[in-house]
Image (cartoon, rainbow, N blue to C red; front, side):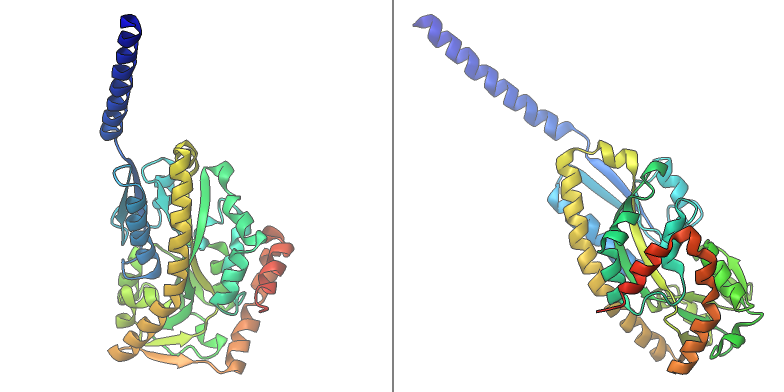
Length: 335
């Protein structure tokens, strides 16, 4: 009896000791830090999405996950952020879809001019099997896509009215580092200039470039409307982002954290995509209220002329992108 009682006591002490050790280990294990770098302001769809991700991830995993958000190119700019992700200096980015052509030519799809009628069509495509397949198309390059975040369709800005495609001839336009966007402006006999997002305001101010293309929220948040007299509401292309992580980092996360962060991103994506249209309508009004920039609304005939002028770009990149993907994107315009 005495021996049995002794063994029971010993087992009880052992259990208590193991529990205490586990608690101490849990308390002393360093949290997983996710550095989330981006190039736009906090008060934009992407900026708000990054802050929402931080909020929900840290609420879901208190003490286990810490998200550090670096907006406005404060950590890495356009030209360096992908390298930083691949070397593990940041863990998460949400680059514009125009930034991925060197990793997979298929994602050039999103840069084709006049591909999507509206954001509803974009959402239908990104939720389709074809859209989801692109998230995993760069895994062999060390990049895992987790979600798409929309901003809005792009508008043209310049210091001269852009009403017809011929008005763009000879004008220097800032473009992202995308071969499709480069070809788009060359098709108009304009001069594309590739430069990072952080350089755009000064380039417009000094005349290094005459114009640009972007969404209302990005134009307003970066004060581009202060140095551009005209804005043409062309809705000719898309600004959207892919939320990506370093593949090795993602694959090494504990399964419960990986699953939980995926759930968080699903929630954030829904919110961001709802906010995108609201933000851009708000910032269109802010630009109007500033009275620095005249907004030109194209007639259907004028817009059709822009579409026709840019249409050869589709044929040029069809083989690289894949006709099946282009057809799937076109189909998304059907309700």
